[in-house]
Image (cartoon, rainbow, N blue to C red; front, side, top):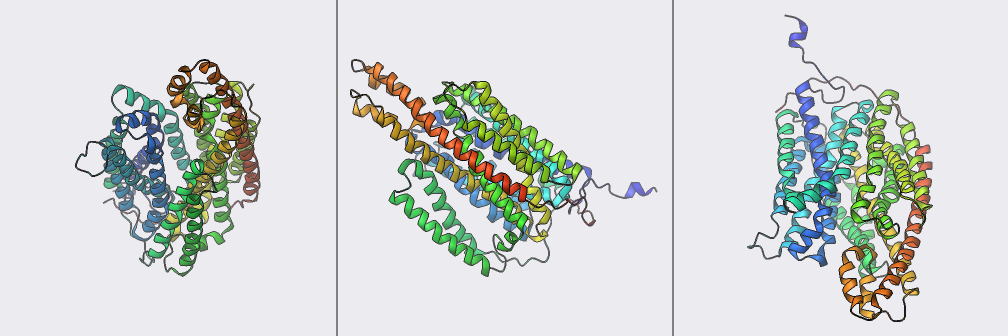
Length: 543
């Protein structure tokens, strides 16, 4: 019998060697899971107005996103470490199963009349549980790529995952709007079920079950508890900054508590036998530089993206629907950049070119944003988005590839999770700081231009520029009831435009400075050649 008839044909050169069916099923399952998690962050936004109206939860609507952010941020490092000790497969399946189950619960929120909380509170709780599943899926998907592919190959496949994220960002809002209008807002959550079940089946039947060796399986409880007590108050404080200000007792207390818990966490990690986030990883200059760089990217780039629609609506006068469509060039640029990065990494065996080029393009994009004003044309915004988006796409896969290339095998999960963790913290901090800058300047400018005959009660509707679009019917009713009220309203809306422009220009300028400084980090990033092969290991059959 020919040798080829009995020898398995391997299709990867990573630590786990898969046959063709295993390879296809694993990649299908991972891509679907990442697509689900990414889609969930964009598709829900368009359904929120309908959700708020039906569940009577306008006063709590920010918590639908905040609770998801809290739990997903915490889940990434915790379950990545657990997967280093006990293996990836069952934690990934567990995360995907939690995500699917809680999607069904979110879709049914408000129908559980036996629960002691109303429909909006049910949705917030279920979104928190859903965030746990999403954090497990996202953290482990990129780690499994590190297990399956050699460092030189990883960028190519991680580029596909970044492209899936971009695809979800582009089409998620449109899909969410269509499902909400044509079926129900509940369908936005129910659509996750069939896709999630396919991902679960693919991984369950074809991905091999591995048990790491040489690892002492002792969970770092002190690290887990202190990390939770550090991150939860930090994210809550950053969420409440735009509403209460940095000097409020609530925000200052939470920040102080978070700082104390950070010290406790760092102390516990130096004593733990199997630390949750091994601090020794950050002695490697590549891992420490990548962590700092991805933190700045999260702050400077992702912290700004949320305010671009506000610029287009509040300054350029673009409708809400059009402003959502105008983000498409940024996401398309990111998709193209992610795919190109993977090809460059594999062909050159190097990530340095993509890192430096991407950081320069992001900085240029931020500078173009900082130069925008009232006379800016839409084409100028589109050009800036394409440049910044393409740079962001080049950068995103770089950090994971560079970190996995130098991380010890037993810490692969923790090292991979660090990039997602620092990006999440950076983007949250960026949104909080930029939001505070925007609102401080906005309130100062808007108060300076208030006409003398403005009704005091009506001014409350101008307190938050982010909500003016939803408040427009109330504004017309409030001002239309008094003589000359509509004239005053038009004057105020003109002042809003000027105040928003000043605040947004400060944000874009700060982001341009941050991303320009980040270029220096990427220039300093040492280029360790990407290994193309690992030592061969025997095939591990699927379970």
